[in-house]
Length: 74
Image (cartoon, rainbow, N blue to C red):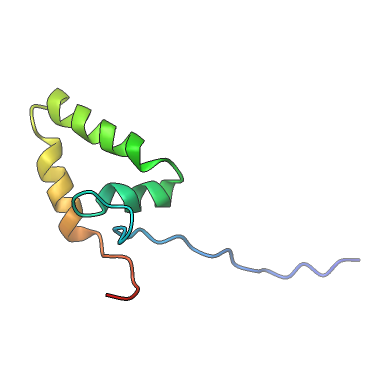
C-alpha cells in the first residue's frame, strides 16, 4: 500500500521580467508565466494595437503598473 501525501506544486507568479524586456518587461514576464516566447507576445501586442485602434496601448500601460517587477537584485 502506498502512502499518498499531498505535496503542493510550486505556484507560478506573474512578474515583469528584469532581463527579458524591451520597454517595461511586461511581455517578457507574461511569456515566462505562460511558457511561450516573448517575441510572440510582442508581435501580438503590436498587432492588437493596430486591430483595436490603439486600445492595446493603455492595456499594456495598465499591465506595466499593475504587474509587480520580478524580485531580485536591483
